[in-house]
Image (cartoon, rainbow, N blue to C red; front, side, top):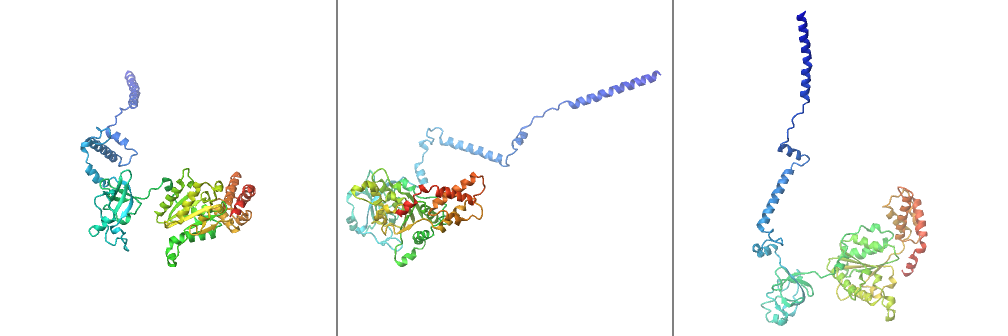
Length: 489
């Protein structure tokens, strides 16, 4: 019995010890593991997340470039200079001048060309001189030394090179020759030239000096208006294209007949009939230089400024291969001249001087060149007869009120850019707008869109157009000046 009790006691003791061992094992599992710090390679891998495969290579190249630039800066001594330049002892002016391959020039004006024998050389078919290639002149001499045609006549057999009298402002006048890169045919009397500062040889011909305000009148970007956007003026567009485009595209037709093409066109008619819109379509159509001028821009504060701007306008136009000059609202400067007592009624004398300069440029002693002149006005009855005569303005094209077909066409043109319902009767809308201009019809379309927005519609209905006609055409009739302008036109 005693042995059995001892055995049970040992088994109970063994059983009581087993849970303790299990408990100790659970405690070992719950103990936190030791944190191993990341080395440099792991950190670089984490930094490379989201970067391109060439990011580190680019970064190394940036570092190398920065180091090289610092080394170059240190060698040049830039940091030691307050001006950011290297010390003067390291300057190489001759090498810099050779690298630039240019010298500073001085502006002068060629006042006269002295030819050998006192006569200008004849030109061959290829544009060269009859006596051979134009030579180059030597040292410059002051014009006060009396160098003239007689001095060239004595030595005409030895030296047949033309000489040029130039005027350098605030210095003197010199008799000089041409540089190595200038041809004799490029230099004319009265033109601006660039001369060197040593021997005052002519090195380059310069364009005429033009006021920046005149240069800004050139239309660089073509308008987005085409001939298809001009409605109710089919006959007028045909006449205009015959005058402007045909001489530029087919000049041989006029040469074969021995006639000069018309160079001036006057567009006149009531306001809103499409005169300026047609000019914008011409600017879009042609590849020639297009210059747009408002008549009031030529009315200046000081005496002579308006005439000077007109001269520079035509001077700039002549320098182009082909040019179209459009003067809008020409009645601002082209009014007819009255007597001394009627000066206030017909404008002041400065406006008349500007108009006379336009008349002179249109048909004066100097050739107009390949310049087409367009003018637009609402009051042709106020223009001076000298401006309207043939030879200056050869064609007068009237832009009157559009007929039924023209008004229908204008409605369809504006409906292309609008969100409208189908099966709208445009001819009915045109019948409801008698004696209306293109600007009136455009206002009707805009008002119809506003009415559709007010009614929260996604498209414009025919009822919106009719309501807009009642509001714009009939409601604003008392403000319309079309009937008054029709008397003048």
